[in-house]
Structures are given as C-alpha cells and as structure tokens.
Image 1: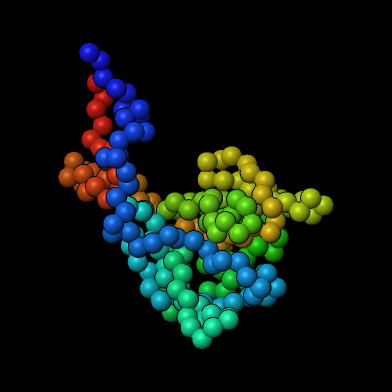
Image 2: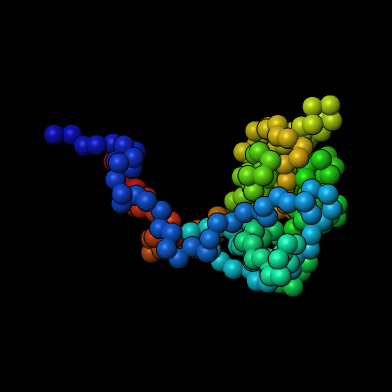
Length: 201
C-alpha cells in the first residue's frame, strides 16, 4: 500500500500552487535606467498597502516617466518609517535616507540595507521578508564587489553596482504574537498555499 511522501506530492500536483488571485503584483525596484546610473530620480509614496500572503507591507510609488508624458507606478517593499506623501529618491546620487534606493558602491560600510539585488538589474532578491535587513560589511574597490551579511547570518559577495533600499523592511515582530487559534492559522495559510494543517504522525 504505502503513501507518497508529502514533498513528492508537491512536485506533481496542481493543488499546492500559490494562491495569487488577490495579490497586488510583483514587488520590485525600478528598472535601471540612465537617471539611476548617473544621477537620481524622485518618486512619491502614494499609498502603503497590504499584500495578501506577504508579511511585509508594500508601498505604491509614483515616478514621472523620463521619456514619455506619463507617470509610472512601481510596487516596492515598504521600509520602516515610510509614510504616504514621502519623497523617495533612486539613483547613484540619492541621499542615504530610509527608503531610498542606491547602488551599494555609494553606501558606506555598516549601513543597514534591504531588498538587494543579487545581480545588477534583477530588481531585488535579498532581505525582502518583514523585519529583515542585510548589513554592508566591506567594499573591495579593486574587484568592484561588496560583502554583505544576510538575515540568515551568511556572508555574500555581490557586485558593487547592485542596488539596495536603505533601512529595515517594515512589518517586523510579526511572529512575536502567537496565532492563538487554528482559525487564525487557517486564514494565514489560505492566502499563501496549501501547506496547512501539517500532520506530525
């Protein structure tokens, strides 16, 4: 008789897919362009919204399009201290303020950053969970690389041209409060994917 292992069922079956119908969209940095490489571009935080299935809040930031008469809306991870109406600056010459997006080469050692690119232009992959951050450990100017300490405690070397957001991801301390009842756990995982309840026998 026997049973299939849970992890093996997840590979084949369509019932373990993420529930994405109500999600707000992909949360990324701006696409890298001339303005970010050489100067900076200003955006304004229009609203801070909850994204179902994500612990961290998301900021809707509006930029003026540099090439056409229109505005671009970007969804970025909200950092602690961000508020609606705040100006966000992205680019090499932006100031070192919470929420701003800078290449790691412009960031001094010991700075707390989040939503960092693994490769130049991938628009953010490290330290994106609620309350997480990475620390810039050191710069190697000869090789053009930067060493980071990630939330897991591991060290990682990335290109100094990779961008990161300054500050800590908002929504920290979420796991400090107990879920208390099965109903809360049910709703938590209903918007994520079919991975609850877990059988321990």
